[in-house]
Image 1 (cartoon, one colour):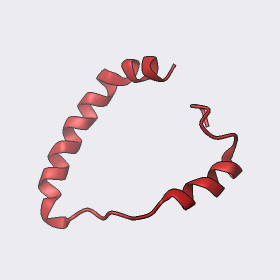
Image 2 (cartoon, rainbow, N blue to C red; image 1 turned 135 degrees about the vertical axis):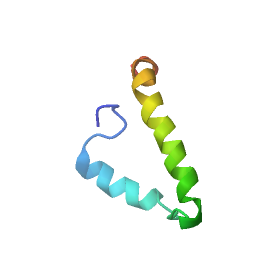
Image 3 (tube, rainbow, N blue to C red; image 1 turned 180 degrees about the vertical axis):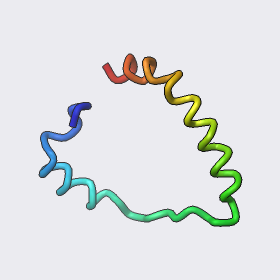
Image 4 (cartoon, rainbow, N blue to C red; image 1 turned 90 degrees about the vertical axis):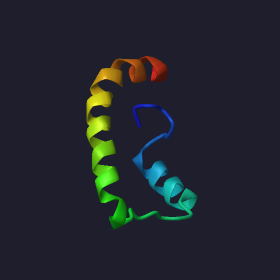
Length: 57
């Protein structure tokens, strides 16, 4: 809502489910890779947060 894409929660709830066409589930065989990547993401996000805000503002 904060980004102004949707007019409200009710509107978003009506629109979003119609756009979802396929659900992806993680492969358990790749768990180690996912865990490593997530650790990197957790470091990156705080460092990039201000830039994300500038892009969206």
